Image 1 (tube, one colour):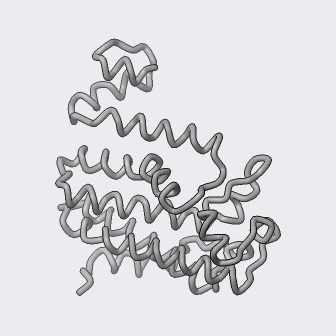
Image 2 (cartoon, helix red, strand yellow; image 1 turned 45 degrees about the vertical axis):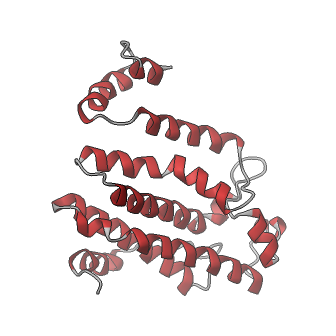
Length: 218
């Protein structure tokens, strides 16, 4: 494929990869990160269920984490700690997006997509039929609380990254973290009913998000 050509120093005529090749070379971007993204795109086509959180985390490691790692490399950052914090933020964002869109994902394709770990659904007593029927039961709320709390904790563990990076890049990371946490809080405040009231950022959320980019938590 085109990535193989770039990796082997061969020419390409594809306009997208023709533009990408000098960027990869200039910033020494790891080719494997692009392969990871392609793997995630392919996985979304064929895989619609996740056995456990480890399996779901592996998906996030391919679909989300490479974006953060590429951005760090473009801005000349990427210490081991920064990479770890970036992965935490990116995985948390992916998870929060999944929990925000449970009702949308379950309607995609013939069987729908359910990103909730199957073993945790079983542990909390939530069946696939409950998700399809959009049942916001006590069991559902307990399951979603567990998912949202874990994603929030993961986001907070990576949040210091935004304060370690200079200028606009650090500001944008802090805004991304604040926005993700805002959605997580909205899911919680709506008693985890993402079926009838999908949480999204509104105009009135932005002042608080902006404030969060300026004031570092104690």
